[in-house]
Image 1 (spheres, rainbow, N blue to C red):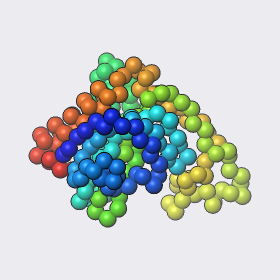
Image 2: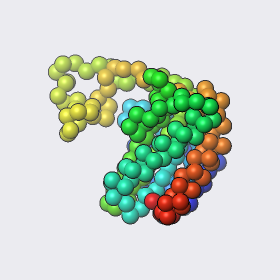
Image 3: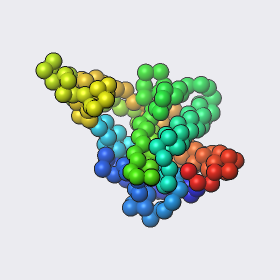
Image 4: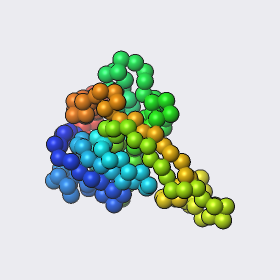
Length: 195
C-alpha cells in the first residue's frame, strides 16, 4: 500500500468523491492512502479547512471497504487521543466526536469492484446550519428510499458543531503521517499489503 502526504490544497465535492480520485488528481494507481489539506462540500456540509484522507480500494467488495473505513477511523481516534494524553475522542459508528462536537466526516463510495474511503478532519472549529425546517407537507418527500435518512439537501434546520484539530493544538501533517504509517504497518502485520 502506498502512503503519501501531498503538500497541495484541494477543494473536493460530491462529484469528486469516487473511486479513481487519486489517479485522476495525482497519478497514483492501485492501493493507496494519501492525505492533504483543502476543503469539502458534501450533502449540505461545507468544511472550509480540512485534513483530507483518501484511500483507494481497488478490487474490493463493499463489506471489505466498510471494514477498512472503520479501521482507519479507529486509528485516527487512537492517534489523536495519544497526543491529547486521554480518552477525549470517541468513535460513534464511522465518525469521531468530542462530547457533542463532531470531529470527522467519513464517506465511502463504491463503483463496480472499486471503492474510495474519504475521511476529513476539520482544522478549525465551525458551526454548520442545515436548510430551514421542513413543512409538514414536505415530510414524506424529504426521505430517501430507505425512509430513515433525509435526502441530500432536505435539511432539518439544525446547527451542528464541529471541533477542529487546531483546538487541540495538533500539527495536521505530523498527525496525518503518523496515521498513514500506522495504517500501513497494521496492513503489513496482517499480511495484507493491499486493501
